[in-house]
Amino acid sequence: MADCIFCKIAVKEIPADLIYEDENLVAFNDINPQAPVHFLVVPKKHIVNLLELGPADAGLLAQVHRVIVSLARKRGIADAGFRVVINTKENGGQTVPHLHFHVLGGRFMDWPPG
Ligand code: AMP
Ligand code: ZN
Image 1: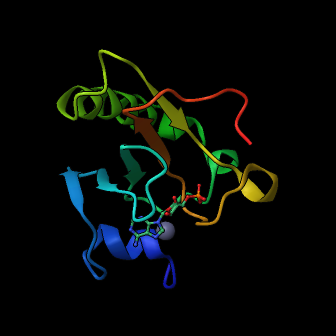
Image 2 (image 1 turned 45 degrees about the horizontal axis):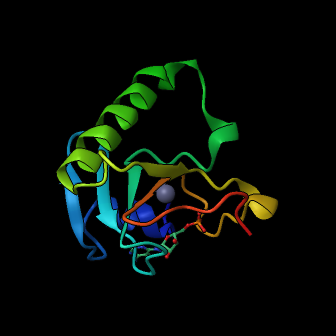
Image 3 (image 1 turned 60 degrees about the vertical axis):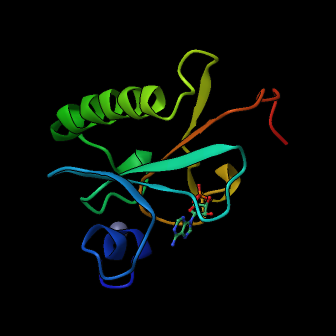
């Protein structure tokens, strides 16, 4: 996707505070953190949102979750716990139309969110 900010981060056209990268995924700190630890795990493939996932993405999704757990441990939020959020379309509050997983920790996460 030519104009997608997360695609551009994935190919290093735009800088980001990268904390992880492999063949399929990047992870970077959110530019507007909502918690002491707030990073995004982002498939390099341009998938607009959850609704666009197909059966071929099963392995990718499993990998996303492994990487989330590994980074949560590394960032020191696994013991106390953390929250994973996938905002989807307008009512979900999605502002960047490229699937991403927010990982938030380092403070108590209220429920329900606002
Ligand atoms: P969402 O509202 O779920 O689409 O989340 C998009 C997130 O991306 C927001 O939390 C933004 O702060 C974050 N964001 C947008 N641009 C950047 C960027 N260049 N680097 C890091 N995070 C970004
Ligand atoms: Zn994209």
